[in-house]
Amino acid sequence: MESHVKFLGLMHILVGGFGGLGSIIFFGLFAGPTTASAYGPLIGYTVTGWMALLLILMLPTIALGVGLLNYRPWARSIGTVIAIIELLNFPLGTVLGVYALWVLMSPETDPLFSPRFQ
Image (cartoon, rainbow, N blue to C red; front, side, top):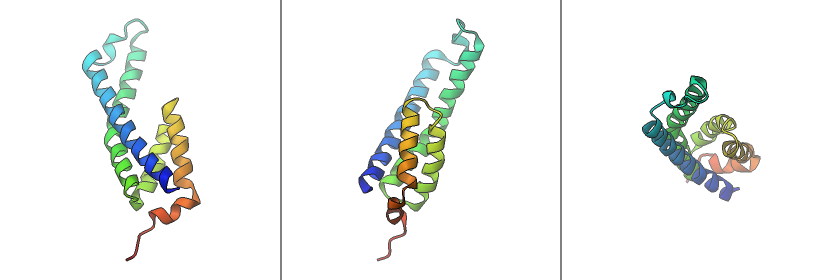
């Protein structure tokens, strides 16, 4: 299960980075909801809201990935919350969210996130 947690941490770093980069590019190129005139402003506002959500979740997702790679105890609870939010991001976010919930809720990961005594 250790390799699953490491892979999940790496995937969260990549998803957070690319999601934030994509939303910054979207805001830079299209400048918000006014460019979606073919379908009306509703689509433009929806896409702008989605890109804003990706931009807001960029830093917590990257921090979660670093926490998972280092087996921090707080990463398991924050990872569960972010995985539930990722379920809305169809199709890749849904797959990552289900995988993250499976890894983080699995009883085999309990020893990995427990405090280590020396």
